[in-house]
Length: 205
Image (cartoon, rainbow, N blue to C red; front, top):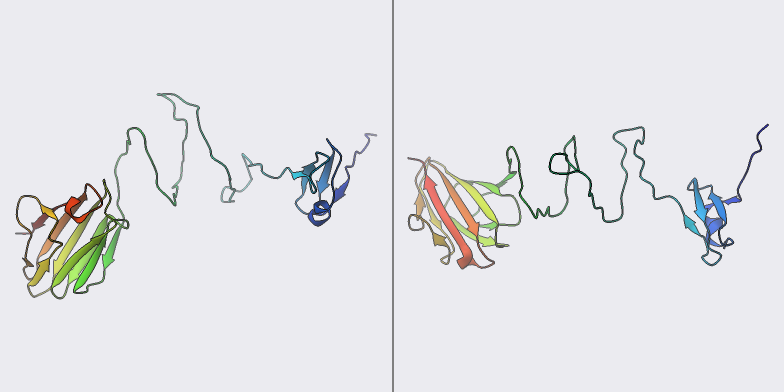
């Protein structure tokens, strides 16, 4: 019959006070993993950082706590392919061409107030339904950011005002939106200041 080889074992708490010999391998019964020892470090080094290629459940979550570089593939073969939607909680920096079939920008509705702030760090599309006069301000301007705002008036005309340093294209800054009209306001940033904002305004005929 084959012989059974059993390693010394213990819980994670027991390992914390144990210093194994150099090259010794033990088994952590709490984490269910091997522990490597160097003769110096109490608790050793648990071997528990593997990412399974096939975890058996496609919706199970695994975590990689290190930088990742993918160098495979070539101009004809993708080096990285994701079949389902992917979520990024921070910036996505592209140092070369960004090629896509379409771009769908998320939008937000800003609840009307006499003075509203256009935050360039949030949604790229915004909607404002006017029920009174409107004065716009802006924050988080940065080179390369842009925002499109759809304005909708109710059954009355409403006055409009904007930061005086904005640069307007094609015409002067609008002063009012007529009753029952829709308008689009495009804003492009070319720096961090209000004078770095270029604006374009179009209203339905």
